[in-house]
Image (cartoon, rainbow, N blue to C red):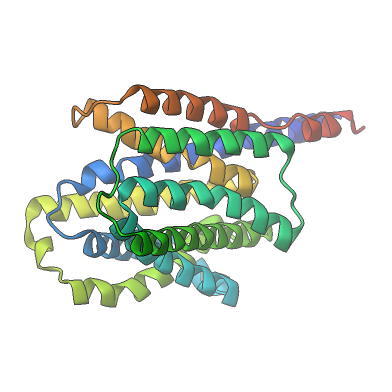
Length: 308
């Protein structure tokens, strides 16, 4: 009986710590935009450098477990990680930052829930659906409320940009579900992230070379990209992988929507930006939705506690 109670307490602790780890990752992701302002490079070169540094660090952390964790599915996940970066920047260059970000980030949780259901039979609950819908609406209000659109974007270019953003959301969902599947199957979360992001680093290295890396000679740019690679990529995905051990991937994808909220708050505090009423309302709605989806379901906990 005592051993059973210990298992229940450990299960409850893991269920609480999982969402916290995912939110911790999202907080780090949310600091990327502010840190990126310190770099003079274009966005594609910056994204490539960030991924090369972060992916190499994750591969080093995985160590010997990296080789025994490699699988065709995780290598496809690595391709998805690299392709997501390219799709995202292709989207925002055609639609503007606001629309491209809303579509890419907002569609990610939806695609994640659908893929998790279709591929692995893990149907998200009604609470997830309601909270995710509210979170996406809050995210859209937060970002679009700032008025950062893309004036003058042609209809055809805007439509193509939205398509790239949707593809980016699908790619994000694919590598998140792939990672969650491998971790739930017994693979070490650090090794899973090491394989996917180490592979993505190899893919993005030629992109960094082609776009030019001379800007890395500037001390400020080097420090900023080191933080982006080690903090907002390596450390964040170590936390994200840890969260996926006990948090359903659909829930984790929704919790990751904390990223734009953190970015907006940093803009106000650090960059002295102003949030309009629509953005403030979106921030509040997003916060409520994230709290709702982060609270663990009690059904499985009661089932464990009722066992003899």
